Every structure is written in C-alpha cells, then in structure tokens.
Length: 166
Image: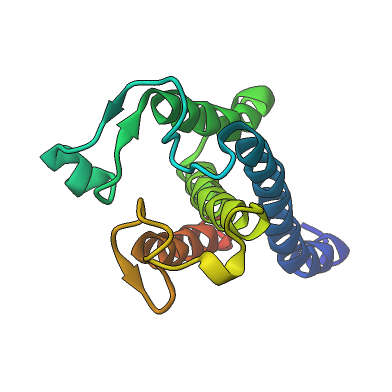
C-alpha cells in the first residue's frame, strides 16, 4: 500500500464510522416515523390486528419481558435481512463484516425505539419513563436497560469491525 493510500485510509476511517452511524440513525428515523403512522399512540403493536404472547419464560429471558407479536415476529427478521443485504450484494462475508452489521442492527433498534417516543405526538421526551412506557420493563439511568446493554455491545462490535489487521 502506498504512503498516500495509507494516509487516506487512516483519515477516512473515523469519517466512515461517523457516516455509518449517521446513516443507521437516518434509517431509524424513517422507520420510527413509519411505526408511528402504523401504531399511533399504542406502541408495541398493542392495537394491531395480530397475535400476541404476553407471558412466557422465554420472553423474560430473550425479549426483556415484552410481549411477542406477529408484527414483531415479521419485522425483526426483515430488518436483519435488510442490514445483511449489502453483504450479499457485494458478495463479501467475514466475521468483521458480520460484527459491523450486528452493531448497526443494535444501533438501529435503539435509535428507532427512542425516536418513536420522542417523535410520537402521544409521548414525546417528557413521557419517556417507566410509568408511561410500560412495555419496557427494566430501566436504569433514565432509559430502558436494553439501550445501555446493546449500546455497549454495539460499540464493542463496531470497534472490532473497524480494527486494522496487523
């Protein structure tokens, strides 16, 4: 690699990370607005014509105690497939690329969920709390625990995905 190519590669990495995060948050914004139009004031598909499983020990273990709905059973895999499409499109898969995709999916859901509350006329930032957001069962430092756990995990995965190969 030439000296100029190396310099460009080094200086573009932080910009690439920033653009990736901004793009993911832009996708989250558009999806949050879509979900606001679909769900209105009744989040977590409460009023949608779909099946629901409210209580099951697996929901406590893997879903943060939230209900599983037909809507979420389809939308979560859709988003996973959507974020993996670029890997298929360019014909490249690696653990590094998978770490980046997984980090982006986590950041997407955190951003989308938060934006759903902030932008939803029925909620807003003032009502973003455990009293009004009953489907997030576990809170810490003013946000659902999931936000904190998956933010840290996403940052670790993003960092690993951008590490230089030695």
